[in-house]
Image 1 (tube, one colour):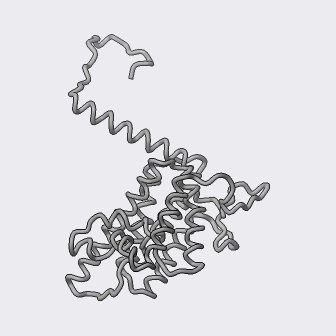
Image 2: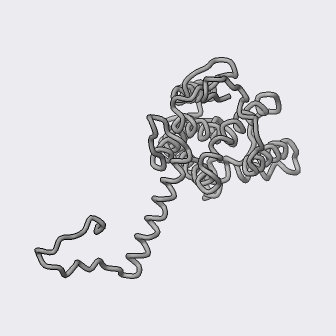
Image 3: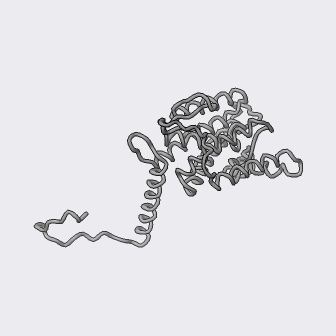
Length: 266
């Protein structure tokens, strides 16, 4: 799927090496909830987790956080291909950000995009501007995760080469445009405007998270640098809160005007 070293070329499609346990669990949850959807006695489980208008109509706010973890769609090869692509990009994102920031990214982008989509749907319903028979279908389940992982990879590895459809090589940075076009085509086919806005919001929020936690090395952003910078930022915030809570104060030096500070003094 991804090539970073053109000499010698290596095309392992992201399947080489042991899979991260978190990714395996995530795919397993998606598959199980997908299967539960097609049995009358168990379909209530994914229905209670997926994003729908009940979020703002009846206050089922937990759906804002649970909807990325349900498998959605129709049985067939398409669903399995989505899981395969999810694994390819998710593996790279996980090894780059590691567990803590990997799940924070999912929650940050997932909840943020759900709030944007649900808010728009509530507004459209209240004003009667647009009737949407089945909202949020294009951002449900593994589809929002695909948008997040691909956007994260494209932000971190702008100059990496991705084999689109496993054949067409393109620069990773162009995957933002590809994602947008796919979401646009899905919107035109479903008229799911809130879902389209949700996908775009997920891409934007992912970009912001990765940019906020990243640094540049020779023009190429790496996930390791992102993780280290985010951890530095997080620790600094904790220290600042502790200093304010305990009332620490900086005491100025008592030296006279002729006292010269050494180079080690900050």
